[in-house]
Length: 189
Image (cartoon, rainbow, N blue to C red; front, side, top):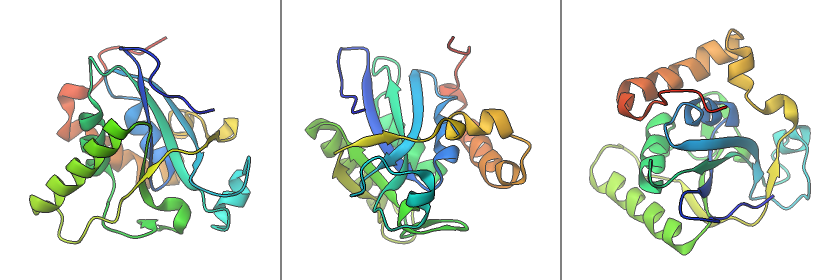
């Protein structure tokens, strides 16, 4: 399912920054985000399963596809959050999650998104906010495969699990601290 901008109040991007549960948990809280779907992109195996992606042999990254209202939150702001909640300087890993499936990647949906992504990365590196070079890939979206249903809204359903408490909760807290003005005021139904 490839989603591209279809009208003025909807745009879509696909991001990988470690475990998709982490990204989904944060973007679910962002004002202006309409939908977040966990999935796989960037590989060669059609319709991969989670088990296949975990081997690192399919070439896919765990990603989230974020649909948002650009009149409420810009693509640039989506990326600023992205670079705050994961480490874009570690190649093929986030914390204890290691492998190409956990790489930092922006799968852009338009040339405009590509330009903004490249600009944000250049600004991040120029600001000295990161001590090491940014290794985030900027690639065109080819195909997005929705992950299995049990991965969708994982943190919302399993927030007490040890992984969720140890890894995802701190990322959610970091987002809430740095972007309190971007928190949803209500739950979208």
